[in-house]
Image (cartoon, rainbow, N blue to C red):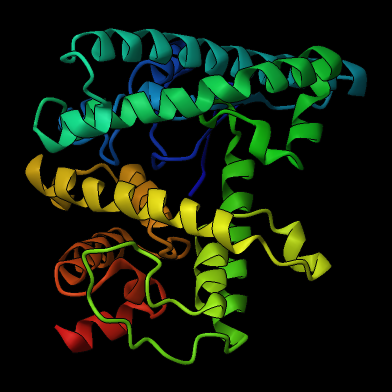
Length: 325
């Protein structure tokens, strides 16, 4: 959820925190501190072992307020400069996160992947997520930089429709909200289509997609966003073999992340935005949910996964898990 703070002729947008009464002199603190929902500027229940650094998330977006005497060209120029500052801060975060990730990786034993290190307890979840996100973001930098050099201050108008090329740290609040709305609508439509008529999937230690019908696998792909949405609009199916591989990688990641969450303190120690991200990765809706609902649903997923295969959870809604508990 995005909140706005208006003070001293400025608007401060942030996708995580609730409104706080801050003076304009303290706005720069936003770039290094993620505030809690209390008036205090300290981070409540922050646990670095389970929560990655705030630099892996978008910085606050500070937008100017147009005064009655300000001309349109002057206002839009200052607005463009605000977006320019936002993207520069996000881009710097990508580089700094990548440097930190490289340092963490260099400390691992030879031939040990970050995933192996997490399973062995050599990396915390916070460190692992930092490595994962920085790796994903750094791959998007070349194309995003090209768009940025061409469009300059008009970049927000372009990347709003090209969300896939934007690093996580460079997504404006409206873009984050739009991505979530699209994902939840796609998930809702997939359930409504009635393509999932059976969830009789036995537990297995084999491949994640064993015993799945093609329509069930396609539903999971839509639920998790494993393939481009335009293929649905064109009525073109995504290659089954590729979808199986993507789902297997995702399945292995989620199982390991569930273990890492519990090992590093559990859902209660996770910050709210981290809970939202973890929920989205598991195909769970987050819009319109309060703090308690988000935490309860994610904890319900982790408990249900101990009893059921991941694929079965993705073919049913959270309300079904509770009935089986």
